[in-house]
Image 1 (cartoon, rainbow, N blue to C red):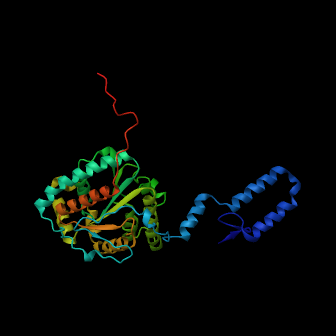
Image 2 (image 1 turned 90 degrees about the horizontal axis):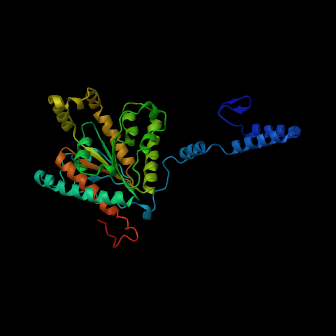
Image 3 (image 1 turned 30 degrees about the vertical axis):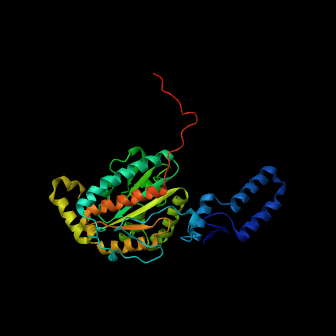
Length: 347
């Protein structure tokens, strides 16, 4: 660390310099109690840096080394619906191993008919979660452009009481958001007790798009995998169950969807010429997705890869997994207030 005039340029005196300062204080003992108190305060400040600085050093020292949750603290996570591939924590994963055309053995008519019933399950369970007001569910959606995040959210959560559900779409960060740490805007929108929170894109953008576009140095985005795992562990310990879905489409399917947007005037608003530039980075994004899925699938927040070329199959697979997860959480209506039994409403 560079030094100026015998002091660290970045902060308080250390080592020999602090010792020299103490000797000087002793030589001027008789200059009043006010100065003694001031010196004591300065020493305490030197020995106990601000909590934020201490926290930052602790994060740097233990980057990505936080212990996993003990078994009794793990959330109740059922198996994902048939057709979904769950990334095994601690293993190397490749999207090339998943067929984006897979349907989980479903037929189109059967899947569309079944979806209505699963939506009703979600609605009923969400009401109990909201009334219980003790825990929350965070559903994260990631996909390449045209992957179907908007359509999945709209279809799966149709009819859910908006009082108990919050959907956040994360675009390019604002100036205020860029002035904070990269998780700041996501943590601020994590669901509170009783809520279902939905992230349309998420904190994973900061190891995906920033990596592919070279927006931050490699050592910066590589450190973020561990920070993300710790962030999700914190949310889990705080009572939030996390479901992470990657909607997996083929390059050929993306081409069809982009062409459909160009051909339909009512879809032009969804088309951005930059999408064509992004498409040129298909392989780079696939590599970035593979790394994120491999390094951030944990026992408490595993990644679920959803074959998404067939929208009707995708919607049912995601809906069933959300409904099954809510059922495993088993939210309960709170007990009735004392004395309510036998009450009569007056005329």
